[in-house]
Length: 88
Image (cartoon, rainbow, N blue to C red; front, top):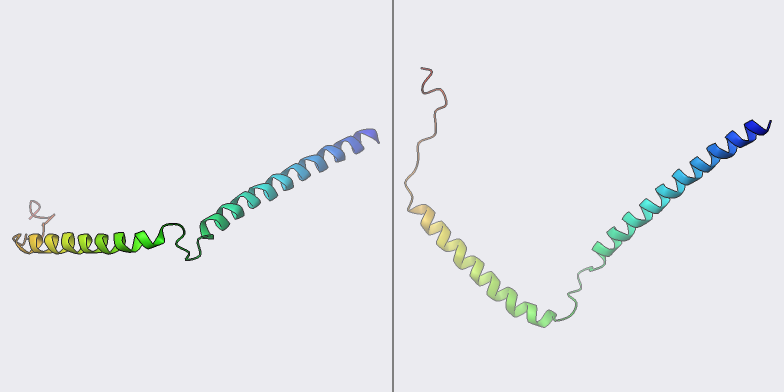
C-alpha cells in the first residue's frame, strides 16, 4: 500500500510540475504580447519631432524611389532565359 501511495504522489507531483510550467510559460508569452501591444497608437515622448523627421524621410524615400525608377527605365530589356536552350 505504501508503494502505491508513493507512486501516486510521484505522479501527482510530476503532473503538477508540468501544469505549473505550462501556466508560467503561457503567462510569460501573454506578457510579451501585451508589451508589444501596449503602444496602441500612442506616439510617446518626442512625437512632435517625429512628424518633421517623418516628412523628411518620406521626401527622401520618394526621391530615392524616383531615382531608382528612372535608372531602371534606362536599362535595356533582357530576353527571358531559356533553360532548354542546350537540350534542343
